[in-house]
Image (cartoon, rainbow, N blue to C red):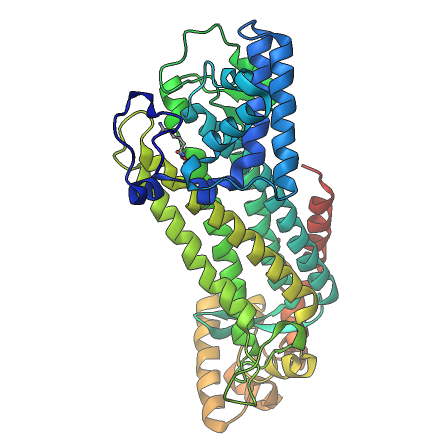
Length: 463
Ligand code: ARG
């Protein structure tokens, strides 16, 4: 390893090659390069604005940085491990291009506030992209819901059939979860969009910089009020990975349901060939790999959340090299969430088909209308708990006789309680059972239609 690194002036010996490799972050922080270039341009313009460097020097620097951007985009900028990190790599290349003026760029700046600026610019961008992907997914959830307001499906508690529901209601529950995800990201965006630039290494700088100027060039909403906090805060990254974990948790719940629904045991959906895979040994199999992968990837994102919390725990102020470890967790979280949202969107859009005959059977073959019999009696004045007990007995007797509630004769009903009339049959059809749950937010068709309308309106909201 060459002794000639950016910081080697005060060193006698050179870095052990394995240690140089261990220390370097260029292998992954190259991901930040475009943000680094943008942040550096703003810093140079601020230096000129405050008279720390001349206007023409700033212009040379900005042009040099733009050239590096073009080189990078054309695949011509590939710094190696000897550059240590993206910040040094850019500075060195800049000096190669524009000569000694390039060495002025780092005036009144440290890599500590620089890297903090870069990851905030990066994350800000990524949050917007993830929000858009959430919107795409919500569009499909709403589309599925619109198609299935009157499709009935068993609703579960404890994974036991509980009460039938509208399939649209089920999709709209996921709309609500993803809507919270969307709004949560918006709140985190606001806390990410604060500039640490100008915090220096930890204590600020002796130069008459204008932090608000560079912040506003970069579109930041504010600046960190304390330089120690500015260089060492990663709360926004933890909040982001937490929000990402919640997105993955929601996706993994939906994935689990799709996996169950596609099993022979449930048999509610057909997996289309475009989104299913086969087995290498069992020719009859069609596997739900996509939702399984999403479910699995949730674990990975939760792991990144743990990693970042543990990295930060007990870290003394201000910058410590431990903070270099934030990047891979953050980058992998971003990639995983984006890929999972995309895959789920495709899966819901074209990868599944509901088996309507099978669903119609499923809501007709059990006692999930038992609550409605109790409600029926309660509406006729029987106290609910007494009605509940009576119906419990009916279920027991029917089970023993191998009958469903709809198969009981009116005479049998009347033996249970004289209040039963012919209209009991209508009251316990699955469709009526669903329609009757018309309380606000319930699965009744009227409620579901209004939920759907609200969801569509929320999607039109540009925020
Ligand atoms: N590569 C470093 C990181 O990612 C940049 C900051 C280095 N700062 C320092 N004081 N060594 O955190």
